[in-house]
Image 1 (cartoon, rainbow, N blue to C red):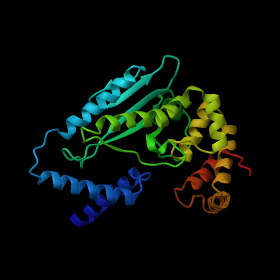
Image 2: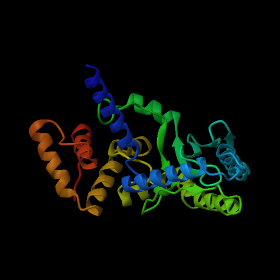
Image 3: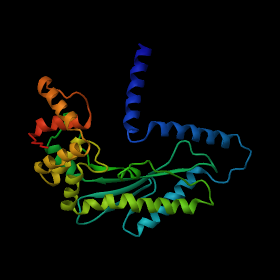
Length: 280
């Protein structure tokens, strides 16, 4: 019984790990962990006197970035390393947050990564009243977001090493520059909903809205079902996946179930649930 329970538990933990790492190349992750473990070992057994504590360095860097964005109305929660902006005439709350690494090593490696998220309590309430997608979906105030490196056409996991005092200023400047380049336009797009909807319909998707269920729900919240019917066909055409979607639809009609949890299979489910008319 003990071993069986252990295997089940490990399986669940591994599944959560896979989901969390879905946007992070697994090979890159392995290389990073190996490199940082080596760095930790080198520091741990080095006789060099350590001057700076990684946690203090990370906290100081986050505070420096927070001071910059504080001039633009962002409020900083030091305990959570999170910047929050709430405008009077907008229902959306904008957040920029930071995280580090468990493999930080004094004088060698102090990692900083940045995330941008959009939240809405009204949207959460709307989801509660309008059930869209699978029955196990839990309404939440999260609208869209993620690691800022994923908010571009060719997604890339962005991170910075701020351990070296001599290059720290340049690293912090690059973090701010990257936030301004990727995160700020992403957050700002929610300030002009008509323009935003038009962009999504033309692209078939949007950064930070990770599932078709989330996309359909958001479009129906800010626009209409017709907007969903414009967006998904564009998604299939750009990615040349009409055949895959039609195959999922055929299986749904035969068995009442979608073949898997892929994006187009989810759209097949939504097509039936919402009575969508998706045409090439």
